[in-house]
Amino acid sequence: MKKLVSIFAAGLALTLILSGCGPQAGGPGTAPGEKAQKLFEQAAQTPDPQQRIRLFTESLALNPDSIETLNNRGAAFANAGDYTQAIADFTQALALKPDNPEVLNNRGIAYRNQGDPAKALADFDQAINVKPDFAEAYLNRGLVFQKNGEPDQAITDFTRVLALNPANTAAYKYRGIALGSKKAYPEAIADFT
Image 1 (cartoon, rainbow, N blue to C red):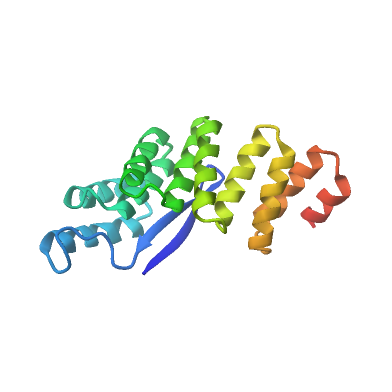
Image 2: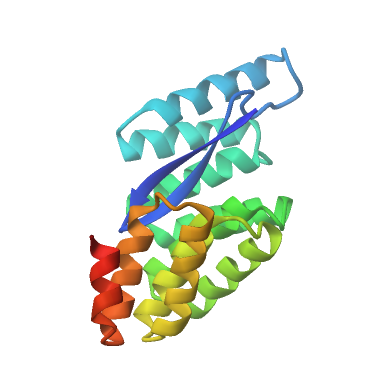
């Protein structure tokens, strides 16, 4: 069973896939598979970003085709500010499973943080096409629209997030900012309160 955990890097949510069964190399019960699993679990638990990257890298040496480990190492690189390496890991994971919405979302965040909004939007669009109820992808796409000076599209995406998750305080905040930029002050104030 997979569990999704969100972390915040550069103001945007990165979705990490933490696998309860972990990455396996050579099948269950094999020494390489057990070692990859142990390294994956250690990496997921360590607070030190460089240690996390090192442990995920060791796990990948045993199982280079682990989408979960590539995604998590990419997120660790992104948290460390190395968006180029993060994008490389996310791209490698997508080569293995092209329609993984969490990895698409994460790569979109990395592209956005690297200053490439067009590629970010393409990844968020694809993540939403694959998983139409993916609130994080709508939120992240809305943030790109907002930064690009497109408040109407941003408001649409933030409203969609709130339809999917009415308790998402970030969506209220960012929609309020977008509404304020359109001088829709009563609506903006309502979102802030």
